[in-house]
Image (cartoon, rainbow, N blue to C red; front, side, top):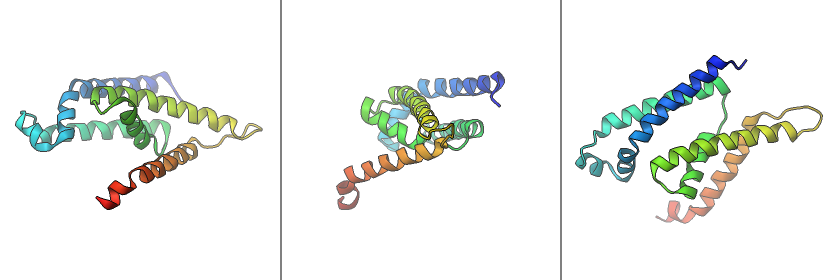
Length: 149
């Protein structure tokens, strides 16, 4: 049920949102520090948060409506990207996009070959397993920070 019109709509939306976020990446970096620093530098924090929230919601809703629920990809990928390539939003958005696509392609390929005989495991199961393992890793690594201050 994939058509070129649907692919074009997804690519156009992703391109528009990515361009906006890329152009405002410095503001997002400052906002990641704290709200007061961002306000003192002249950034309208409420407006920026609202716009980014709406654009993120739009991207997620289009992605889910076209590809289905693929659990932990949106939660795993930015953490891994940030830990590998740093916390600069300009780099993080680019590498998160690439790594997210790679993770889904790998999960889809693995789901097609893991069960012999032509049966196909749902991709959401594999992403949920990857996500669960990753969050247990994060929990174990940051356990002292979370519970001991």
